[in-house]
Image 1: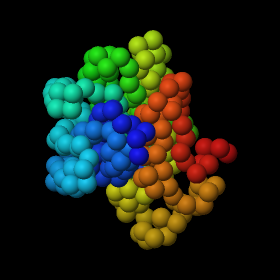
Image 2 (image 1 turned 60 degrees about the vertical axis):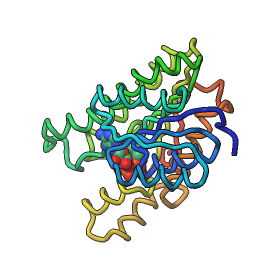
Image 3 (image 1 turned 180 degrees about the vertical axis):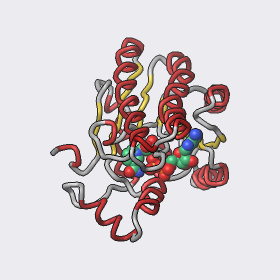
Image 4 (image 1 turned 90 degrees about the vertical axis):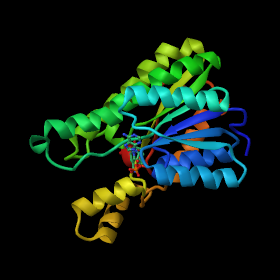
Length: 256
Ligand SMILES: NC(=O)c1ccc[n+]([C@@H]2O[C@H](COP(=O)([O-])OP(=O)(O)OC[C@H]3O[C@@H](n4cnc5c(N)ncnc54)[C@H](O)[C@@H]3O)[C@@H](O)[C@H]2O)c1
């Protein structure tokens, strides 16, 4: 319960899904946590519930694709909690599933704006605070789609491949300052993103859920906590010699 005590974390996209699990597990391990999300009512309710349990958690309404908004919220969160030591770049969108020749430029740009620029903006404006803290940990949510092709999701693949290599670039850039940067590559995790994706692509949700689960050698989808515990580990001092790593948490999907 104390793996992150004394640390302050920002989790982008922390209101639901994987981000919410990261917020809950990090707070449970003693971190102060800032939730950044577009979903104000869900984010505020989560902060309220965790505060009622004795944790130090606060919510900021942030669009990660808006640089000025990201900088203002990061500065405000660091001021509120007295510093910053962990950034989880989790906010992301999948875009609409379709073949590359049918993707519009606007659809392409929105996915890159959230998934790639969002990681860049938050990293850029967190670094001065991590530097001030004389070190820290950045955990970037890439995907199995940043490692291998799945199909019919070109903007998402491009964005998650970019996050994978931004991670390695930043790991090298900031290693000498004690700032570690790693990526997590989830397989299918049962969250609103995956539910919406399956609802949009398959007529029978339960059949689609079972089919999506069966592509993992372990035989089923993961749950948000499977990713949150990996994020807790990478954020903690247990991972103090790990930087630039890509951690697949995918039930064996990419082991083939
Ligand atoms: N669920 C999976 O199977 C899976 C697999 C691989 C990678 N991932 C990645 O993990 C991350 C979280 O995925 P999830 O399944 O929990 O997604 P989700 O859609 O369930 O939740 C994403 C959260 O991010 C927020 N968000 C979206 N755009 C935002 C923006 N512009 N600014 C601020 N917040 C924004 C949403 O409001 C939501 O709270 C994403 O980066 C996703 O690509 C998910």
